[in-house]
Length: 279
Image (cartoon, rainbow, N blue to C red; front, top):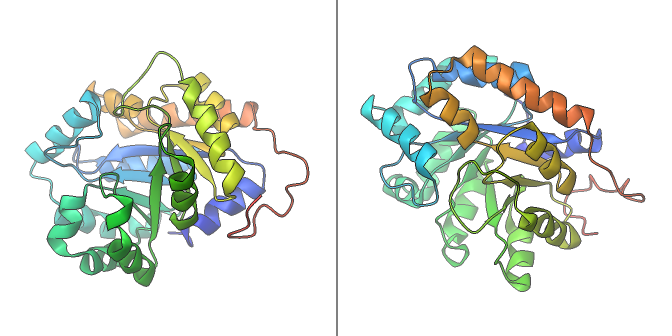
């Protein structure tokens, strides 16, 4: 796997690339690690792996069903990390693991982050961990060399948003709507508004997720921010019987659309790849 998550995303952004991070539920099928390779070959800049959880409160019906399928197969944190060890030498893009606080706290923040680093995971998302209670995990992730990605939402107050952007590592995850994950007919207007608020206070890459459902919406989100996260639309395909090859073609279509409609880089931002710089 490559270097640090934020360094790689900044480098790709600096080259004018719209960032693409597809999602897969770990353990959803026997061949789930082949999905990582298919995403990579299709042009993903990073890949989000969701740990299946019995009560995924921020996930809509599709991701919940994907988690249920993985858990029914006997998938555990241990099994997912073991399978990542087996494939790690073939994966060159950064892997970002998303989970709920219960699974982190069960192991202890320090031990959990060390385990992620050992198998080559570059980033961690824990969406249900309140910012005011995240200091221990932030320190543990930093000590392990894992970027802890924090989330902002349309309702996030200005002072809170600035603090989240300052403390997030890897990128800032912009939740496009006040709701759960899932496909939607159109990208919410709040997505672009939120990305602009982040970009006004931080130069850290901002990726838009929740509700991005196809190439047209991906282009729209990519132009608003620096990139896009796509999960439910891909997991619905798996639940409907799609193979890793099918998912690779889906992600290739997203990559093609993003490359055909590149985001506009504002003039005077040649300094943008200096970590921590604020516009």
